[in-house]
Image (cartoon, rainbow, N blue to C red; front, side, top):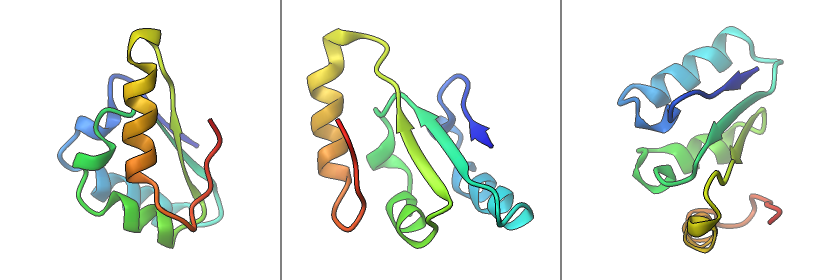
Length: 86
């Protein structure tokens, strides 16, 4: 299952949606597709990702002009033991 469109992390109820979806479909992998600019602004997002391996955070870079900025933001957001590939 994927959550995308517009920028899902801008929704003030995003974490409630995410937790609700994963509760309804606990065996389904949930992919959150974002532009990456809001990852550090969503309360509890890191702990939710850390505690639920069925949730994946995918970052799509739509404008190469911001690629370095987004990568740095994501690197600062992600702390081991989460794995990531750039």
